[in-house]
Length: 199
Ligand SMILES: [Zn+2]
Image (cartoon, rainbow, N blue to C red):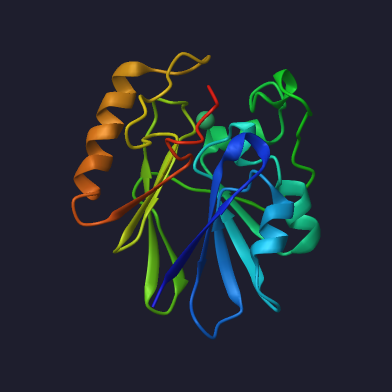
């Protein structure tokens, strides 16, 4: 059965989620803001096969090169415009923060609304485009969980003031997420209590 462990990164306290099953070494991540926090959070022998990016703001992807150094085969799943931003510190906004981040690999798999990715024999990850916070936003969900990134953080208004943000789209996306969350637990990109970022 799919297990989920939350790991909070140092960079703007963004949340990452480890998806794994008991007795299986292969595992997956939702977002990678901080690769050292992941290195600490993994058990011995675990192998990160892929990372799913909820969107391309730097606080959700800044650890990507560190992660891919530890796991060179790790696939990076993102949307079409998320892929662009992996290679542009202007588009992922890291240029305007402390340190520029540009992905130095090319193991990218582009996902679209409606896609399904098999994680384990009994667990699939479903992909839903949820633009608004930014155009690259994807929400991922399983039978029991919905990983929203910054498209929806409970009790925090969705940030749409950044370049390419869109309030009307964000509202539509939020409604879709709320529908899913009726029977699933929400795993957001930040927690209300330590949410300090406008990104
Ligand atoms: Zn963001």
